[in-house]
Length: 305
Image (cartoon, rainbow, N blue to C red; front, side, top):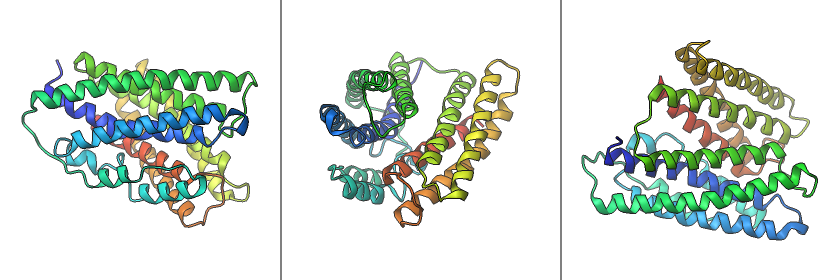
């Protein structure tokens, strides 16, 4: 049975990371539709605003509750988050709420030994709200993907990217659902499941970046392609670990090393985009988005190690 302290901390940590990811997915969708599908853009914008509201509540509940190590992991905000939001706001005129980023940067960690019933109740209600919103978002993303692959819709986003962000929304939902059941997770089983999921995500990030770089960025394209190949291999090895044909400890160690390298690549790429030194069609917020996801995976791997 999951303790009340772990239930509250894990729930809030999940929201601080994933709610920002979901609102950014909504932003990427919003700016990718053609004028014909302005109703889809409006729906995506409404999701973005709704996740802003969820994130604000999660931030307010988290101060002094979340561990300092989690806050310093780089999966909540990075040194670039505010800058990429301001740049993306400039390019698109979408009113990104940068005050939330400032609020997150001011969060303080805590080492509580007890959680009061009011906070537990509010976290439980927040979890239920997020699940309801995610259910709607999952259906929206599913519809977009269906229309794209049947040639009923054009967006500037790859079909694989829609599938990619759909899987992340489903993972978020399943993790909240697991927390709501209050069941303790077997650490080895969790490690295998998360490494399978995130190694695949890291591979796809690399392929997206490769495809969004200007064709003249030869070195970066080769580096992104190499990361894609490496994480595809780790994805296969993670599945082999589930089948017990490879030792999980070795896969975890290899994934940890590769994720540290791609984290550095993502950080350098984000800097290059902000400094106008990388030619691409990458919206700046995407650079920080994939950086935070690599930081998230890195924290998980260090826990499993």
